[in-house]
Length: 489
Ligand code: SAH
Ligand code: SF4
Ligand code: F3S
Image 1 (cartoon, helix red, strand yellow):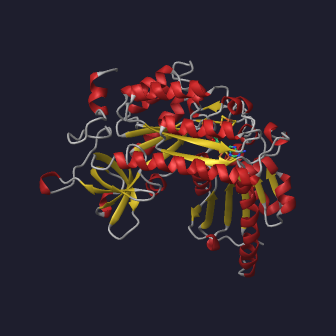
Image 2 (tube, helix red, strand yellow; image 1 turned 45 degrees about the vertical axis):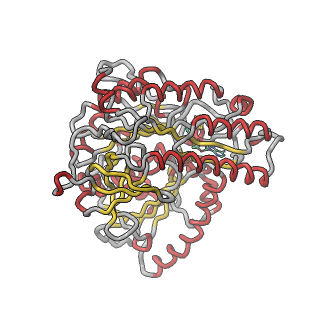
Image 3 (tube, protein in one colour; image 1 turned 180 degrees about the vertical axis):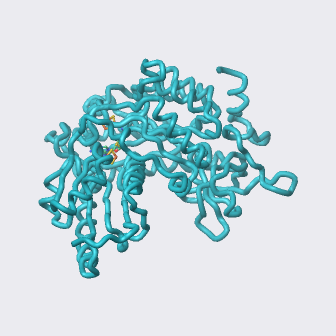
């Protein structure tokens, strides 16, 4: 016999990419409709969801060690007369399905990314029938059935919000599991995205981050019935009152069309920052990866972006030790890093993934070599990141404050270039955009001081975030706001 306790508590732990962060929020929203409230402590949970990532072996294995720890938690709950339902969601769920049930007896429910709208039903079924697996790609659109967050939930999640506009991938890079775990490319229609953005802004969100595995391949249905491009969507979203900042991630170099590059010139709300993974600087490796572009094409895209928006901060992902990668291939990667001067970048050792073509290659690079190349690459990346950050010292820029900072009295926020900035400021700045003068650089963030108008209140900024105000003492970087006003739309 089950005892009804209200409210039931939910704990969701997210691994992997931003798509999972968004999905975790949607899972919380759909279960909130059934009376579940989120808890920050797993010990209190009635339902515990691990939203997993399958991208590299380490990420996938992490799930099993976490499940090992949950066995104890589940036993303790049972001792207290409570039932703890453990669910595995996300990309490991999709990739391994039944195998998870076999390997980890603690798991009650395995749910793939396309079935989250069925979660309330699945949780109820797991309680009655025992262990349940749902990794189908259902015909219905999960987005149509997922609940919208309440205003309170949105506010608690902060001033920058993710909106998934695109899911899945048809590119099939030879190292990557995403086309298998997330399925074919799917674009949400404009009307749905617009409604979601308007709701978020009404709850106080200032920055919208459009997300997708291949976000710039988005081609959703417009109100006219025809397919829109991502550029057109950005122009439309920039018109929504209250949208101060726009970003989109992750993009593929092949899908950076002229209109999208022009949007970086024309839209003051579109932040001067772009994550555009290249993976390798070697044409031979790019070809073997099936990236469908070469090094020169990538550099050309960056050049066009820099023409459109000279202060744009570029970031990338790199894989070292892809099968067959020679020292020459790797030095091509280092040279590309030097040529672009990325503001930041992630780099990973190649991890062979089951079912992907590259995993079967008999030309694997040794672990020692991968580790050695990774260290060299990271040193180059750090060098350029430090130079980029140092170049912003002395400038006055706009910071969107997200929460409390590292030390007492500090608040933390993001610059237009996505740098974390620590500022001595009152807690009331949270969720607001203020002018900040960058005063120095630390290891992972910048330090800044609020710019105070007439010695009284800090400068408040409510319109679109125009990025940096020109600093007469620092020549070189043109003022994006002035450029945007004089050219384009
Ligand atoms: N859709 C994005 C990236 C998705 S995965 C794109 O096209 O770039 C995020 C990053 O994980 C990738 O950019 C890649 O650098 C890394 N990655 C993916 N598969 C990997 C593997 N098998 N081994 C190591 N890194 C991998
Ligand atoms: Fe993976 Fe390539 Fe698709 Fe990116 S574009 S998700 S790396 S297959
Ligand atoms: Fe990982 Fe799946 Fe994202 S494999 S990176 S959680 S799409």
